[in-house]
View 1: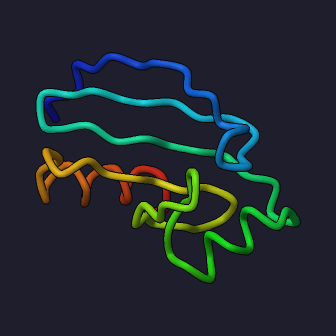
View 2: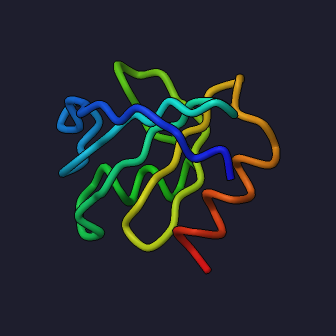
View 3: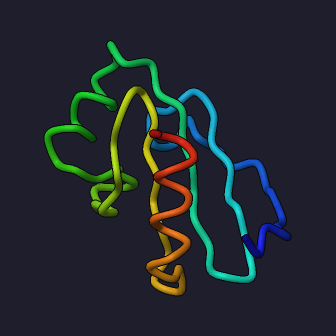
Length: 88
């Protein structure tokens, strides 16, 4: 699966999340956030289908309290695999 990756902690509170990590893989980069599903930030993410940082929207896949933001360098295969692993 080309799973060799680097994991970095992010300042998740800047987007209203509880936790956040950036994953850099051979197939691209993505960020994964965990939200309190009752929070305003999570409700806004669902509505906008994006996470918000300093009034800028970043399109994201939002489901079950998680948000996944894929960088432009993420391959379609990586996007499919990560969504399949997290949301089978």
